[in-house]
Structure formats: C-alpha cells, structure tokens
Length: 241
Image 1 (cartoon, rainbow, N blue to C red):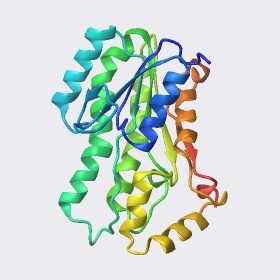
Image 2 (image 1 turned 60 degrees about the horizontal axis):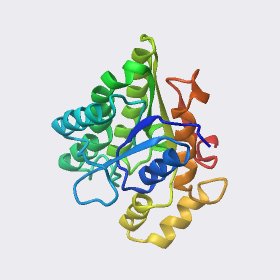
Image 3 (image 1 turned 45 degrees about the vertical axis):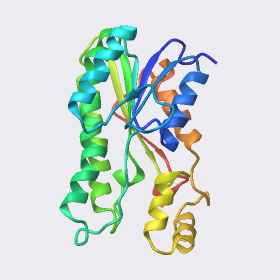
Image 4 (image 1 turned 90 degrees about the vertical axis):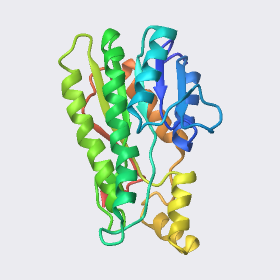
C-alpha cells in the first residue's frame, strides 16, 4: 500500500481494459488517478481526444488549476487495425498513427512542463508489435515501433533536468479486452485465430490487464528511480522465441 501515495497521475484511454486497470491500480496504491478518454465513455474525469492538441492544452491547464502538479502520465490510449501494406488504405494508416503515435507525442509534450516541476515519470504503452513485425499489422507495427523510440528520446531529454523526468515503454502481447477481441473478430474466423494466437505464447494464454497495470505502477513509483529509456516486455514469452 502507498507506493504511489499522493502522486497525481494522468491516464489516457482510461475507459479501455488496460487504462481502467491502471487507474484502479494507481488509486489502490494511494495515488490520484486522473482518468481521461473520448466523449461518451464512462467513469472518466476529463474528456480528452489524444489526437487533439487543443484538448491536451485544456486538460493540462485544468490539472494545473486543480492540483498544481503532475507526477505521472500513462499514455494508454490506442487502437489496432489488421492490414498488410497492400490492403491498408491511407485513411486507416493515418487514423492508427494519429491515436497511437501522435497521441503519445502530444501527451509527452504537454504533460512535460508540469512533470518537470517536481520530477515524474511517463509510461508509454507500446506493444510486442513495436518490437517484432507482423505481415498484417503494417500500421500498428509502425505506430508502436514509433512509440518505443519516441520514449527513448523523451527519456534522454528528461534526464537533463533536475528533478528528473523518466520515461519508459511497456510492451504487452495480446491482453484480454476489447482490442484483442476486435483483432480476433476481424480475422473472420475468431475461434481459429484465438487458438493460433494462444499457441504463439509459450505461457499458453492471453495476458490480463492487471498484469500490465502492475508494471505501470512500478514504473510510476520511486522504486524505479534508476530506470528510464527502457522497454518492459509483458508477453508470456512470445518474443523469447
């Protein structure tokens, strides 16, 4: 208890499986979780479209007025689309990049002035698909690979300040929830697809959102004070092969 005591932490995509689990874990560890997502989602504190710079500016200003500080940011908003380089149209490419990569960029950029006041930590949700490729994940691979290297750039920038702003990326494999289910359904043969995806994981199952949230808590806490610019893989052994 209390690993994040009184820390103010903004979470994007907080209505999703991972985002909601992260908010719950922050609160359980004594922190103040600020839940954000697009309009119409339940159990959120601020409406935030991560692709809108004006939304980011507004939310940052509201947090500054409300708390005067920000100790952490978890960029958990993201979408996945199946598609090879040939059958991914440009509109879908741009949509995936806008949410997954541009949204993470805007979050890091506009949270940074608050984070550097007292020091803090950023956790960017990438994916194992940001480390290894898939023939039918062209846009998703590119966006999540971009998140991985953006994280390192932000980490090196944050290390130049005193107090420090740390930044790390988390790379889950398939996690039970709406995103994984949408990928399975998009294949046209969900039972076969789920069985194949499960076989690819040495531990023989999909991950749980709480397992990702637990890693995020560690990276947001003072326990990881000497950790920055790193990637943390939560994949049941998928990338060990």
